[in-house]
Length: 164
Length: 164
DNA sequence: AGATGAACGTTATTATATAACTTGGAGATC
DNA sequence: GATCTCCAAGTTATATAATAACGTTCATCT
Image (tube, chains in turn purple, red, green, brown):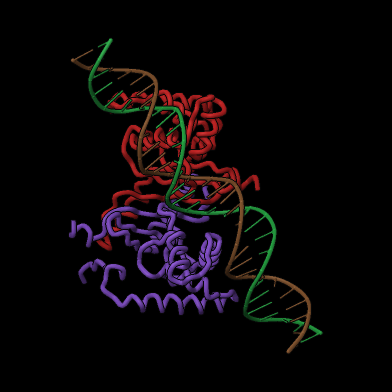
C-alpha cells in the first residue's frame, strides 16, 4: 500500500455548510452531556468561528454580531462567549494570531497542533501523538511536567505553493 | 551510563551577572559580524530582557527605561529595539505571553521550544531536534512546508512542584 | 563643514482583552 | 401562575499590546 498523503478537509472541496451544521450539532450534544447551556449567542459565535477553516479574531466576530445580526454587542459579549466555548473544548485559541478556530474533535479532550498557511491563512488542526510525546519526553528530561502545549506552525500549504 | 536529568541553568544557582555579561558580549560579536549596530538603547533592552530567565513584556521594559534610566521613551522606542533584536536572533518572542526572552544560542539559527512554569514564570529554551522533526514529518504528511514553529509548553517545573 | 541615512523621539491611533457593575430572562420552587 | 434565584448578557470604562506617521538627532562618509 502506497504511503498516502492525506489531504485535510480544509483543502478538499466540500459542502462547508455541512461542517458548520455538524459542528453545531456536536456542540449541542456535548453541552447537554456536560449540563451547560449553549445559548443562542454562544451558538452563533461558534457558527461564526466555523464559517471558514481560518482563525477568526474576536473583533471580527464582534463586527458580524453588530452589523449582520443587529445585536448590541461590546467586546465582553464576544469574549464571554469565546471563554465558554474554550472552556468546553469547542474552540481553540491560536496565540500567534490572537484568533479562534472551531475544534475538530470537541468530543474528547486532546492536545492539538496547528499548521497555518502564511498565504491563505487556512489552519489545519492536527492531533499528533508523536509531537505530543516528543514534547513530553523533552520536558521530562529536565523534570518539567507538561500541562498544556501551544504548537503553531507557520508555513505554506500545498495549494499556495503551487499557486505562487 | 545513567540517564542524566540535566537541570537547566535557570534552575541552577549561578552568577546571573555572568549570564548577562556573556549575552551582551555574544551580541556585540554577532552584530559586528553581521555589520549591524548594537546601539546603547538596543544593548540596554537586551540587558533588561536578560535580567532574569523569565519572559519580559514590552511595557515592562518601557517602564524601566522611563523610571530607572530616566530616558524619554514611548512604545515605539521599545518595539523598535525589540524588532532589531528579534531580526538578529538575539531575543525570542513568546506568543502565548506577549513577552520576550533572551536567546540562549544566538550564534546559530535554530528552532526553539519553550517550557514555561505556570508558577514561577521561568521559561526554558530547548532546541529539540526530535520535536522539530516530529513537526516537520507531520506537516509533510499533509504536504505542508514548515517555515517556522511556535512551541510553548505550559506546566510546572521541578522546584515549583516541590514547593507547592 | 555638508550631505546622507539610520536611529530615535513624539504624537496619535489601532488592536486586543478585561474589570466592574447593571439589567434581563430561563428554570426552579412554591 | 407568581416569585425567587442565578446565570447570561448588556453597558461603561479601562487596561494592555502594538503600530502608523512624521519630525529630529546623530554617526559616518565625503
